[in-house]
Image (tube, rainbow, N blue to C red; front, side):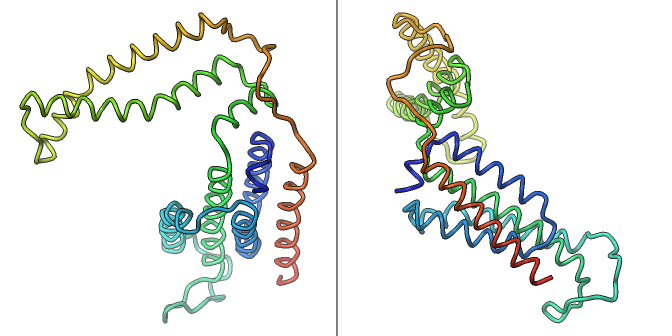
Amino acid sequence: MFLQRLNPSYKAVTIIVFIIFLATIFEPVTPLLFLIWTFVVTFLFGGVSLKKYLLYFTPFIIFALGMLWTSIAFADTPNNPSDTISLFGTSLPKESVLTALALSLRVLNVAALSLMFVFTTNIVHFILSMMQQLKLPPRIAYGVLAGYRFLPMLKDELMIIHDAHRIRGVNQAKTMREKWQNYKRYLIPLLASAIRKAERTAMAMESKGFTGDKSRSFYRQFSIQKQDFIFSIIMLIGFTISYLLSYQLG
């Protein structure tokens, strides 16, 4: 898909730029229209599963609704208290409602743009791209990659420790306090295993000639191409249309 073929670093910078643009908007129409545009681009050019997307997006919806309610309930006194909006039989200051909507929609936009990046980007490609385009030091980059590779291994290691304790007849936890005691018991062997894996990884990297030099060569090359600029233009068109329509609506 189109979004998967983009340069990860360029895509990340583009998304951050539009998040900054949205931070300067204090009315609800532009964020709402741009949110719809982001959804269209994500599903049309990203091939993202709707069910999976909704699963991750739902917590942000709940958070945005909470922000909407608190922003209205604890808003400052509006400049024009007589200008009200009737919602569910209750008259609310229009200024407070619009401000709360703008803040909530801004949160949803940040979530939608972030999920667009997460669902269409390979983390390994992103780190390699950051080294090549954003000049991230290899020492930091490969440390992050090693940690990312260790996460599934730590989960498997935890299951092995858990099974070993069961074989030795350790009582299974039933209450929260017993579960907490079990996790404390797992902590030391899990930490020891992680240290051993880290030492082996460091020795392997050193034996292969890794020095952390920034001028190193890369087997997998990343570059900024025409399609990356097309992505920026697509997002800029959506933001411009949203802003102009908001301006026309006053």
